[in-house]
Image (cartoon, rainbow over all chains, first blue to last red; front, top):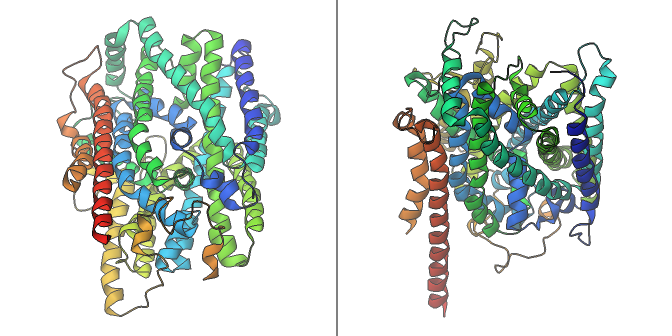
Length: 542
Length: 73
């Protein structure tokens, strides 16, 4: 694979990379507001994005480079089980249709920037808000690291990743450059940069998928051929496990896993800080609901993309590291220049979410740790300054993580991150619909869910790993194999409900709720909701 | 109206979580096993359902605010 540098592909890749870099810096001037030194401006793009910008931003945010590499890689490795990403993204949209508009309204009314802001306002509990913030940051960090893994895969296949014997500095230089540039324009332009770059990224991705899904099957002799050779490959026995490599259709035993993974991941997706950041940057409630009807286009693309995993098998791509399967398929199948376009699509696909994630994590730190616990009287300008610096630190942290540790560590943490972030669901979505849960009960449920999830994931072994070998384990009491995150979530809810009864019985003090029922349905332009936002600090004064 | 909206949003969950109903190879469509094209088809179906839910919800909101406005006058 490292048979020299692919010059043409690399040139095309660099062209697009320079293009988005210029756009990233120019983005600061796009729809510039009068007061740029607030977190609303830097961290939420002035909450001004309409349907299409939000669509690109959310799409760029949720369907990351890692997704593009990992979903077909999972199919390549084991077949049907990897396809759960499709039902997962189908289920996401009916879910967010019901709760995100409420979150948007209440956040708009009270100037909330993060989910933790809302939780603190709703339950009057800094502790609960801190738990949500820390979970969010912990879950986001490895996610950013995985974006780097995505870029690395592309660089490797282009031949600029360096072989085993090159100096580590030369080897990692391209990655360092890419991230230096990313960090610089995120710092200067905030959320506007990824919003603008997302246009390029998605256009490239759609072109690449459309071409790949038509061109590659023709070259390989049609889908019949592709699935026939995949069937053959899956039925071969894996020497490590003594079982077949995979299957084209999940068997009886795999169906619970499939369904719980789809449901659990769907519930978790919009708990991630970066999804919420992209949502809150939209202009109105309508924009969000309308987006749930057009975002599934990405799911369709994801499904087609997943099929590339089968094509990689049929095309005879043989890689040790499954992450390289798709980039290698592009390299083998496409003419050099188009392979460059495809690699650029993946590379830029990593930059957009990495930028949004670092902004989201920075907002959480600034609003819910720095402001709540360190410097309560921070001005909006100071908040923005802190957020900008934290966004840099978060990225440096992710970079160090990827460069110093084994890739599997990042993947393990990402797996844990998904389980963890799901544990904030009761506080957030529960809080959007009811105030019945007691704040301390929510903390209790969260803690139990976190502990169960971590311990359970630690105990899963795979042929190659002793711990964190997968995300599915036997569900206690049912006996089927299911997604650990979902099991932990159910336990979390049960504990929360029981503890709420206990707290109510002992009359534990209920926090102050600063929101009102009508806040949850307010829309821009309604009486009492300003079109121009109050400064982000308005809520701290009462 | 709200019941219909609820059903539109609930249907994808029933269809997708009942994996046993679609975990099979046949019928094959242009070489793609049933398992795969059926789920891709559901992307389109669920999109249509969400769109219907959205339209109904808009109409519902309008009807409610009209009723409210009328009562106040």
